[in-house]
Length: 215
Ligand SMILES: *Cc1c(COP(=O)(O)O)cnc(C)c1O
Image (cartoon, rainbow, N blue to C red; front, side):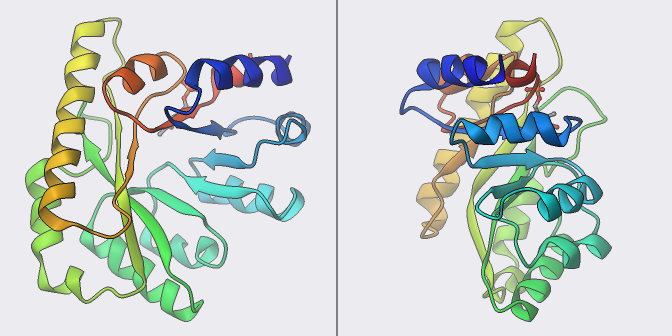
């Protein structure tokens, strides 16, 4: 089942986007089953679960963090995290940079941009994002690699609204890419189980799919 779901999703996505499996709330055997298909990119939204899974699962998995990260927890994931997709403040970025230095590595990050209508979702506004990128302190972070943006659309059946949110993030992404010319600013992470094909049509090149893999 899991293997068939993964195959089907991969066929739909083709080369258009990178496919990250969201393993949050799933059991270790379920994640192992997904890993057996050869898939190596997995995402968790909570540090505690990420650590538990990192401990017991194969070490060639590339782990992504997609949930709100508290500064006091950065130190636990800094040694191994592949991509932190949910950076939403300068203070957090500063701590990631400090922990990256301690671990003698450069940590890949996406800035999470708030695009939904809901109040509950984390993320920077476009103005806050630009302020962050223009700040002197940001420019001093040598152990951070800004690889792009992440966003979550509103939780709604209204496809036109979701599409408008994705398109606005794509246009902001293009604007930043040409303005700042960061070396690896290539990733636009948007799209989940219910909307990943729409997200890809709107310019996403990384989708984060959970429930559709494990259903
Ligand atoms: C849970 C989650 C997903 C995956 O959601 P599904 O609908 O299960 O595919 C993607 N991104 C984030 C940030 C999430 O928290």
